[in-house]
Length: 316
Image 1 (cartoon, rainbow, N blue to C red):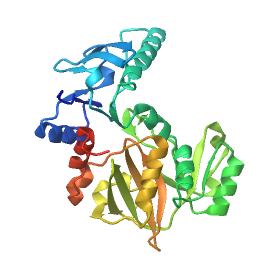
Image 2 (cartoon, one colour):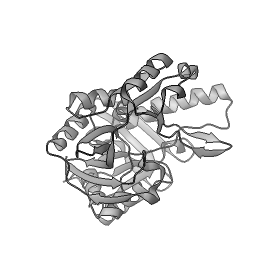
Image 3 (cartoon, rainbow, N blue to C red):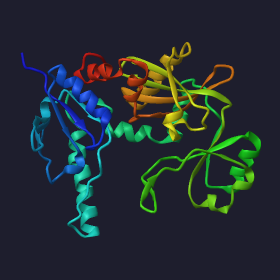
Image 4 (cartoon, rainbow, N blue to C red):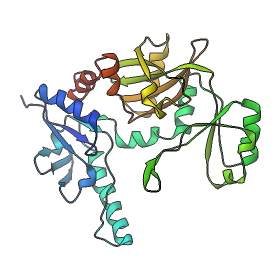
């Protein structure tokens, strides 16, 4: 009987969550090949053949080689982008595109491989409008939300639904004076909205009168619910003020979580909820590549083992 193949882990060098999962897999004797797709072609190489049986070939790092036809699972986390600094702008753009559709296409087409999560499905699920639409269809409660570049529509929405929050639709790298920062969630008043809103799309959402937040992490068929108390509009802005407790999610929520993930073809998701004064849980978003491992340290929930089980393919 042929031994199962390795777990491929695709992420950047600085990823403590991945370090913990790989440590657990190593303790179990599961072979792991870790790499950053951004290392191609400097220290990462591959040769893939398309055959009637699917993808065949190898992928090699300085210390490991994986048989592409024998990959057990692929853990797609947070790889860096392709860069070709020795090329001019036009040639670099061409080379990066070829790398994305070449190496990226191969990694997205491995036979009999469990993806956690598939990179294409991650891309689909990262669109917040899509996530909210699927959440509505799955029966989640969620706040009224407007996505617009029309200042008049934004002001009317704020007057009707206030208090209202502004939320970025995505969070790319943003720097001020060379320092990385993020666009924060913030309250919005009608007088705050000017014609600059017409410059791009914005998301406005009624603020839930919350008493706490919840992060619900789904790993395969296992669900881990953690209540987060902070007193903050956005708990991610000050981790020193957070307190955590493992809780039971409301009745019927878990079936909706799994239905949501199935709609996007995902097996992992980090869901955020706001808990209001009536103990109702309001869906805010699901991050298909969200952070979660720090919650095990705070609560004792066996999340790292659950992820290793999934990648080992002990669970669906």
